[in-house]
Image 1 (tube, rainbow, N blue to C red):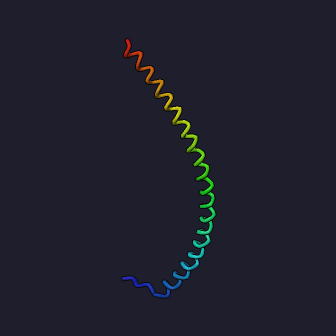
Image 2 (cartoon, rainbow, N blue to C red):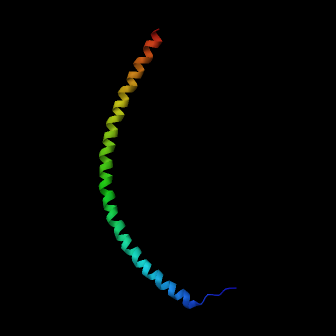
Image 3 (cartoon, rainbow, N blue to C red):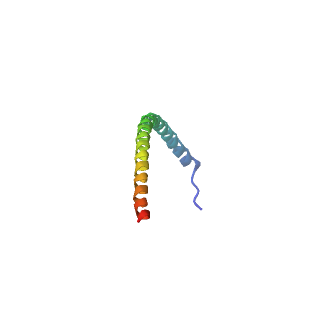
Length: 75
């Protein structure tokens, strides 16, 4: 059975310690990105209003379909 010396683990743990600092820097970058997402969410808000207008247009179209159904019933 292969037994690794605790000293080898000690060296690796130090390397992990350096990596954790790198992750810390990345978390700050994510923080900046979250602000960008905040701006995008406002843009999505404007788009949702545009979708609202489209839904009204669909409402008018549904009435048009209703008128098409009535002539067939009259015949």
